[in-house]
Length: 149
Image 1: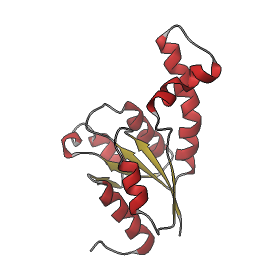
Image 2: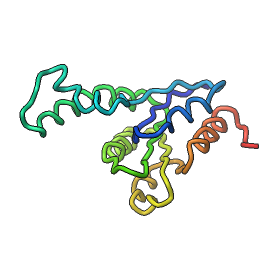
Image 3: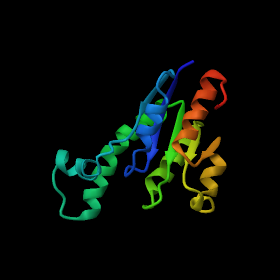
Image 4: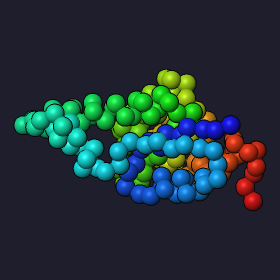
C-alpha cells in the first residue's frame, strides 16, 4: 500500500520536515501548499496584476493558492492539518472542513491548549496528535502494522 499525504496548515515551524524525514522508508508521497509566506500572499497580484484594495489583493492570492490546495486535498489519502501555537490558522480549519466534506482521512496536529477551540475539527478527524512524531507513528502503523518501540 502507498499513501498520498497532504500537509496543511501552519507554515512557521519545521513540522512538515519532521514528518517527511521521520517517514523515510515508508511508501508515502507528500504534498503541501506553498509555504513561502510572502509568495503565498502575493501570488495573485504578482501574476495577475496589482490591486489597490487589500481585499482584492488577498482575494486574488487566495484563489490562485486554492488551485494547488484543492488538487492536493482531492488527491490525498490522508490530510494532516496542523494548527500552530502563534497564529489563528483559519485556512487550516477550512482545509479540514473541505477534506471532511470529501470523506478524506484527517489527522489533526495541534498543541493541547487548542483542544476546546478545535473540538468540531477533532470530531471530524480520525486521529488528533500533539507532536509530528505521533503522525509518523500513525503512518508507520497504517502502512506496516508496526507499533512504536
